[in-house]
View (cartoon, rainbow, N blue to C red):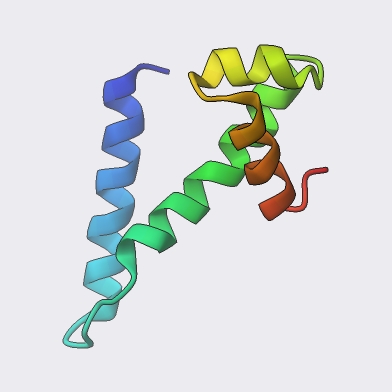
Length: 77
């Protein structure tokens, strides 16, 4: 899957979200999207890295301690 197709998926889902909202005000969209994307991304990267946190952190381009905090936040540790 390319970067463009991931962006397309997010775009399409946000369009549906706004359509479903109708006239209701939107709020906390940033947190909603980050939480929806972050957990499955972490799960997939950890699987790909065979649970090696250092390797997963390198794949994600983040510090291992940051990865560990995110894994704990999402209940993945």
